[in-house]
Amino acid sequence: MQTENQTSKIKPADRLASVSEYYFSKKLKEVAQMNAEGKDVISLGIGSPDMPPSEATIQTLCREAQNPDGHGYMPYVGIPELRRSFAAWYKKWYGVELNPNTEIQPLIGSKEGILHVTLAFVNPGEQVLVPNPGYPTYTSLSKILGAEVINYNLKEESGWMPDFDELEKMDMSRVKLMWTNYPNMPTGANATPELYAKLVDFARRKDIVIVNDNPYSFILNDHPLSILSVPGAKECCIEFNSMSKSHNMPGWRIGMLASNADFVQWILKVKSNIDSGMFRAMQLAAANALEAEQEWYDGNNKNYRNRRHLAGEIMHALGCTYDEKQVGMFLWGKIPDSCADVEELTEKVLHNARVFITPGFIFGSNGKRYIRISLCCKDHKLEEALKRIREMK
Image (cartoon, rainbow, N blue to C red; front, side, top):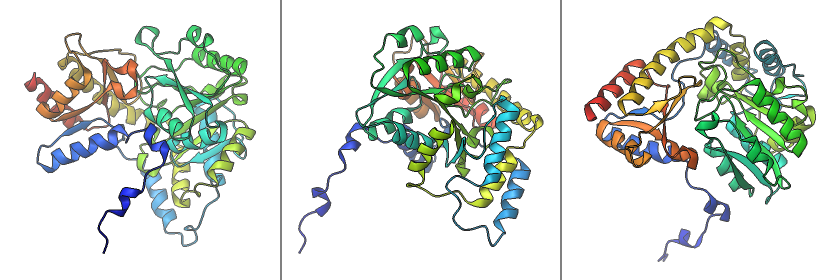
């Protein structure tokens, strides 16, 4: 007769000691429990677009899903139609020439790309540069894979741009990758040609790879930019892009990376041993979505602009300040000096006003005096959130 729990003798891999469960994974469980108790929490936390893709995109998906020959395994490199559409999209909007056969790799979302790129370039014990504040997955996946994370500072007084004087003083002898993310999440700082030129020059001189995560360039941004537009960038840079944000397709899990043919082939060597190609109907629908004209993006941004105004009112109601020049699908604001701790503020808002707002500390120590509001919420919900917070105050 079994008298003890056999799982008590089984231990997880040592790598799990270096990371914790993703903040939103934990917090959204709490929000779900509050909703189950009838508390009707308004979530302004995660950046999951709540608007649909274009009608033509959905029609293409439905039509192609009816094809009885379209349900088999797909190529690891993605179907030619999708790669060609990504190349045409980069040429039209970023002015960047890409060879669809050798310089583009479709991804199951750019989050997957972080894993594959790190596996392809970084040995255990080598270093990666990660922005502070920055997307938490850059840090967590690096740690899981045995890389050493070195933070570099982004600060409000520098416009949330890297401090190149500080970077020049750092020991780069063991650094393999530098993660960048512009337009920036969480701060909303926009990319500039000058920033990208500096990053490419830095990468070439230091013999490191810049990986620029670029999913927000079409949200409330009149001039989308790509780091690959800098001459010579393909030699030392990889850029991620995602249809989750730009085309309202987060649940589809379709993204891409672009770089030189050698880098793409190294990454494919990893990817082809981990997953398979995406459903053909989804790839064809994504190719259709990439053909959207300016009018579609303008309509999307009209909705975000209305929401951005309401998010600004919420910031004011909380006594927070923010930069009007921010782009992207979040609003990043600094908490008032009278507030001792950002988590104290967000927990008060959650439990007293039943509104979930992201505390900035989850993005790094330089975010500890900031909050982030997602614009992925219907106007009437944002209006209700504003009403509740004003009543709480």
